[in-house]
Image (cartoon, rainbow, N blue to C red):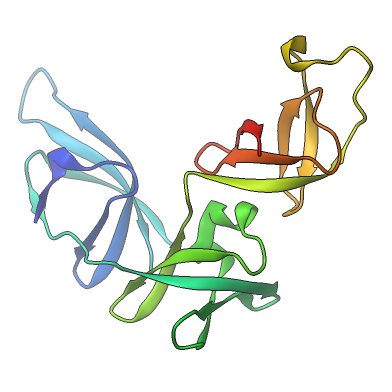
Length: 186
């Protein structure tokens, strides 16, 4: 059990047989009356997003998610295909199940997949990933590390990020998977 006071983004709870992930939570203490928590949930089974008001301190059962290491194989019209590296079984997740992680998945990479009662429900990425720059405008002579400007760059997964002016096509860059920002050369 977990208290609504301890809700934070990314936490997963189980309620009425539904698997709910906390997207946002705000603790409100009005001048008059008891405190409450405004929570925005994403239902991991249906993809529906709901907003609820709950009593502060209310106890909710925490969902027990298991992590399995799987290899990302490919994406097609039906979804994203993964292979269990121990049993070689293949399973599929939809783009809605994966969320923003689709921007950082490379074929043949190993990722942590979340399962709930044997069903795949999502993907956990590392804090940062190294990706190759496949397209960007050429740098201009004099652009250095201390140049201070940025330019758009398309990465091998198709994601576009802002990078420093000295980054060129073919460079490997490290990107923060939580914010989508350039961190450093890889």
